[in-house]
Image (cartoon, rainbow, N blue to C red; front, top):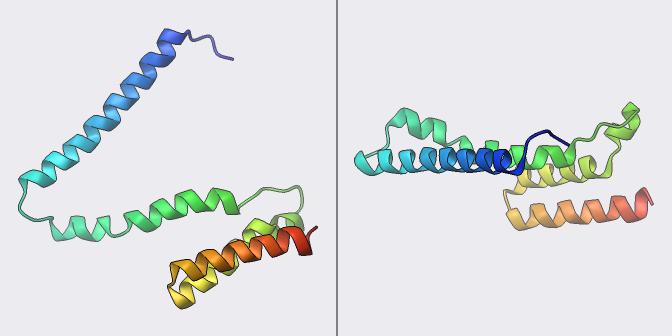
Length: 113
């Protein structure tokens, strides 16, 4: 529990929402005013999708268990590694999802049951 009242909490939420909206609007406005994206910005923006994907996937794969074998032999991590290998070798999204989900199912319900 916090000592902040509902007005303070909703005020912080509103300020953060307005700041996020303003930041996005400024980028849209900036790129609407220039004719083409500078090459340096293109190079940097190329890394945004992989970084976002890594930020979304990594917390699901990595667990902190009391012992090292429990951490390394986690079914989510092993299935993620299998999906990563398939993604790297085939570059096929559907194959990656299929192998990852199949490996997770197999590990969770057959191997570590």
